Length: 338
Image (cartoon, rainbow, N blue to C red):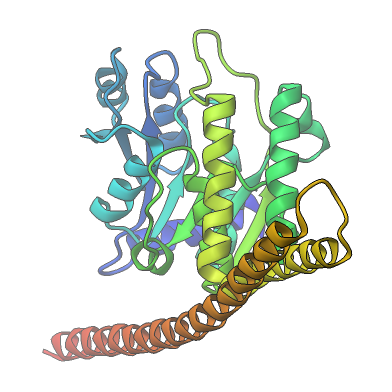
């Protein structure tokens, strides 16, 4: 879909009867040098949209600059980008959502291509992928390595082929925003959004965007080691929650293999540890391995039941939404006849 066509579709949906339009969500922490420019550029690209800046305890004039540029400003007292995203999704009501960082590193003009799949009904979330060849040079070497590690881990575990897991430039449908529970409090929130979208069956597409140079006076808020650990920890935790049989099955098989190795060494009298101790260790490892496999089977069954329940809730929600839309159309038709 072309940029012009995307703009026309969005405008039509924004100005339709009863429509809530497009909301641009900007999470911010100490973005005084750039936030006004971000707000102005998105207001220019999407003149009918409403821009919301969520300030996360900034110590500078981020909130004042955002208001001056025409944004509606909210405060989130819990420190962390994840908490900001949770508040944005809970408090803002719209048909379509765009989320973009307030550091002015994402091009506002790309918003039409980003929104097009969601507005057109082809995706529930579109992600601005920064990891194509032209944008790679904008990343520090360690950031490229971290992105590659997270991407490879997630793609391997969840059997997907995504190029940018950590992008902060995304568009969402209303169904996605209002139907996805989020718990991450920090910069692991993008990982959580991506994994839960994949595992809950939401349609996800990636749209290439050009990452721009970070403006003078703007600094990255990511702490490489701390946030990298949180992201990997979130990936493994969601792997455990959504694929318990695979997770606990792998742990159980590893423990059983170690039990076999310890048992063989103890039986044959190999190694410096007394054979009796090795046999005791083998028995313990074997028991733990069986428990892990059993836990995986039980949790897999529970997860399947949970997925079935979520499916029925989603179907019921769709039916209620369709019924409400039909009722509104009927009321409008009767009003027109009068």
